[in-house]
Length: 477
Image (cartoon, rainbow, N blue to C red; front, side, top):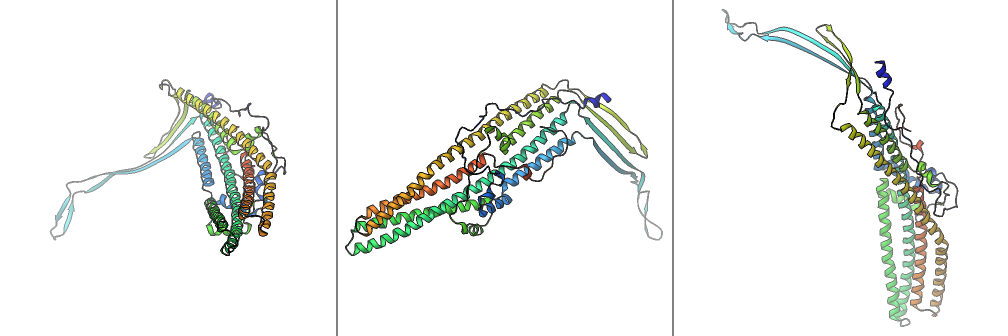
């Protein structure tokens, strides 16, 4: 017995070590932004000086079905660990019963006495015995080769993976809300541009029609200004519809009523969030620590490693201790002893289980590599997009100012008869296109910052995890 208990300290299978991915680049290839501070990404949203965005993100977190699902998966993983731990503990069951035995005299019947009363003859129901039985049964499978310990390690690693999944869902949700919010603010700016242009063109069309009716302007010029105004009004309606779609997307993410959301959005109409810039101080290898999806994939890898040891334990004998204390008719008896099970022939089932566990580890290892490289790619793409957008910003602003100045000059020439309607509408269209391009570029730049925030892992903080505890026990590092 002592030898068996000493063997219980034996654990089969590989001891897990986090893999080193030597091929991960040592530095980013894409140009990095150097403006802004080394921001704490966990608090980045609060630093943007946009309380509406912060409110939307907080509301979305409280409402989000995806975060609720992630918390439920954590609870599932904790329950699986509790089940696994119970397999390594003694099992005690109690039983009890009570019974009564007797006989019935089938010759019994009713007769009438001399006074005319009915009486029952024969013995009827006769109780001959009763009895009470109770007992306790106990069993305990000794974890000789560490199967239960390896299973516990796997389940603990999966709890940690599910917590990392929760962080990943939270970062993704914050980025999604911010992206829709930025798109909406840019959309509002474009709608305001079209609205201003439509008002100006309507007035130009009205004055040109009056002039044409008086014979001072060609009717074709009047039709041109009216057509230009109608085209801008159509663009305005389309742009407003796009804004409405973005509002409805935010309604879906936050769970707010549309009226409540529009009231919240109204005071800051058309305002993009404050300065989004931050410096990227990390290197590609740091993504292993920064991104929750990479961390979750690594914890799944640790779980599959532990399951190899659990599968190998099935190749070896199992030992259990059992005992019982039955009590019947006032007499107590007891029994106690070990039971040894030897795997002699199972048709290769146990070894197939080991190969399956090893294949699962290999599969998860390559999944982990894929997640890491996808993370590196996302950051590189975000850096390239951001660098290109920032490089176009000055040119786009200069173009917008230049075309606006040109339009103003043509408008003045038109007033004194030195420019025709075609020149005016062409200059107006160029000025509007340049302004629209500038707004779209600024909106896209904000979206690229948000994408970079997400690609870098969003500054997730373990202290912000949902309430959960992992029972003390074997660790999987």
